[in-house]
Image (tube, rainbow, N blue to C red; front, side, top):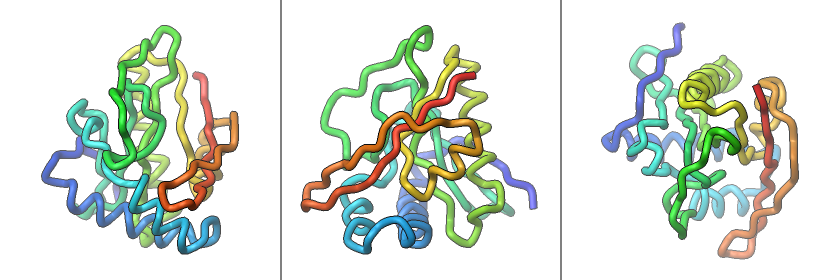
Length: 177
């Protein structure tokens, strides 16, 4: 089944938020506790509408069914949806900053079928077309194997504190072309 991508729209947000919750609940159980998963959905994971506004967030579809989402950013935020951002999100300079690979989620029924890889390729190509030569991301633990295979190397392990006292393990990763 061919995977297609298109830019996400504001009309997609309700369906994307459902997809994100399904993805996190379905693919994170071997890496995070149930409390960490629910806390992350509440406080971190969700759509970053700045990416939609910038035209850098994509939905992946198979037969017109949304099976994944992900994007890239020319802004400083490394990870998190609207509920996670509290400050201005300044633009990066592609001559010395890395583009951000952001907010990747795949429906559990379509995991390990090339959806994530497909979206990463779309995002890296778009970022390169905008002058970026390197990429950074904040990987959730279930995403680390995919990003590693795609050429990303771990820079640092972060235990991100969440408002309810939970800690969420994130791995900051980088790739240079």
